[in-house]
Length: 378
Image 1: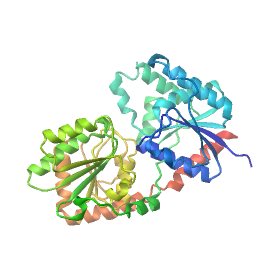
Image 2: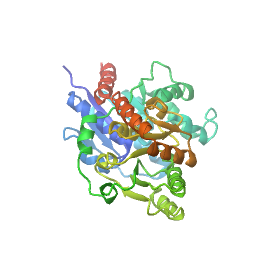
Image 3: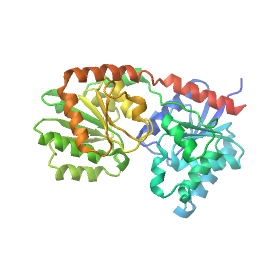
């Protein structure tokens, strides 16, 4: 039986939900006998050490040009890798490489599969998408050139057909998958942190890249509301990103420095999350938020904003989690107080959330991708 070779492209392997899902997929495909070549434009990132040893890693062979020529350079570098490796299928998940991958595949007559894990509603902020910015036009064209586009939620699947005008046959919905057993093993590892040792005050957990889309400023304001109400709670934030220093300054301005701790990148975030009393997702945009499912799998009660896509496909409000409006600090604060004070609600959210997380199987995700790749390589 022929071994199917897939050329996977990515900007790098810095921490993030999309990068983690990419690694889960690569690991699963390797176990199924696929040959994987990983093309990284920058061989860097905390997840680099997690790449299976069977995977060949490539990078550009020519210097990076100025911004104006970067798109052409990316396409050419991927085309060179295609010529060298002769893959059956190309796969890309992140926009910094998706456009170039789609065009390189088209020019090289290779089938291309793209994933979409963020809501397309954000493109409307670039102006009228039907007249379109150049960026919108390139993303739409790339998606139309692909043989298959894989959204991680039904909401994104609907948007791909409406915004990018893709045919229903090209859109293949596959939910993100999680290795729940491994996650729970990692969660069992002890951590030495004073907030978990004294048990005096409940701890809220938050995990994600420190960027505007995650809405962390509203979570910090919510902690301020909770503090001013006279209820003692603390917040642990895990992750790094461009807004980290700005968020630290906001903590000082809000006078909640004794209530908030930024841990930065943590190799095993589950050991911290599992010891929190509550998890909050404050995002403005999500595709299918991995951190929400991970927190539920660890048995935490969860609160999430109603993003345009994602959380409402995971959570049944008041049963497996609490949904609140986006960019509403007061609503987040009220939900935090309610979940921490109402023991019956707290226990129900824990039990039902953990049960719901079981639906997001890693095996199911990898199998569906494998079917797509095998179907396109014939």
